[in-house]
Length: 359
Image 1 (cartoon, helix red, strand yellow):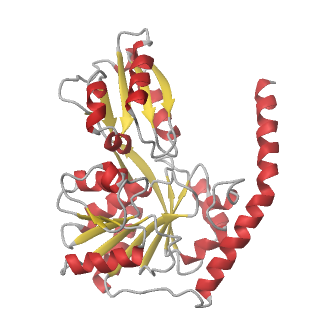
Image 2 (cartoon, rainbow, N blue to C red; image 1 turned 180 degrees about the horizontal axis):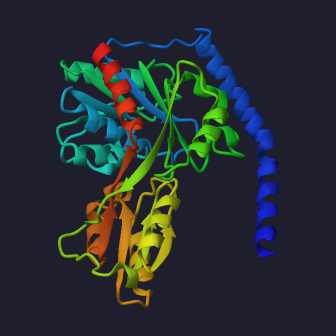
Image 3 (cartoon, rainbow, N blue to C red; image 1 turned 180 degrees about the vertical axis):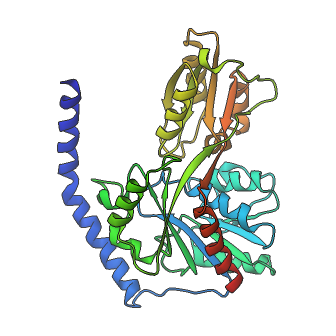
């Protein structure tokens, strides 16, 4: 009964937002039509441009997909990533270096630069300008990976990869604010590749067929299914020790990302108890927040306890003014990777590599 008393008000609240979704949908429809008709100009470039994006507002796994492409291409091509740099404190075009912080470039670009030091990482809200300045600064650049740029139609990517979360497929979603779609599901027609992300590693053939049928892809589009592979915990500071026995350990799960549920469910399988402490996506942690996190951790009675966060959150927790409080916690972060089952992995890789070689 408690579940129903919560469920119906939430449904009623979403129903009240439907008129706003219609207005938002009309605005995005007109905008897209202006690009389709050539009223708004779209710019093309001679270099290989690969766009990774989605139709929904975050949480589909764009960052691990970009990292997958970096690992696939970096051995043979000169690469750069271009992001907006969401919630950064700087403005305009900015090229990252080894000392750039999440406040300079945003958490995701900071993560790319930290994991791939030789990668050219840049941020610019104006993607056309960002691409032009990347080529001015790096003359031998082969490929630019456009992070979260599916709705940036003033730039035409040669290859567009559209991600949709297995738990929130775009054809079952609604427009903002009643749902999470940034534009109509019909926007999927601009994608060359559609990836259903965060699926169970062993997805049944029947489930695959049902999803493929509902996506109803065009002949020129390829549909793939990816899953998340979790890496080993990495200590955030040098003086913390991994728990010897996970089954007797309590985890304080610290997340400021769009969709922390998959990580929470994974940790529940491994640890005795998971205590969630969730913040809004891209949350900018302050000292007062760390003080509260330390307090929450100290209130856990189990002596076998750790704090686990995401790699993206760790980028934002590295601010100098937070380190006094970070060191009070046995803090670990868990890296994640996008992966595909064979033979899909080989097919996906071949399609990307063939595009880059051709261009």
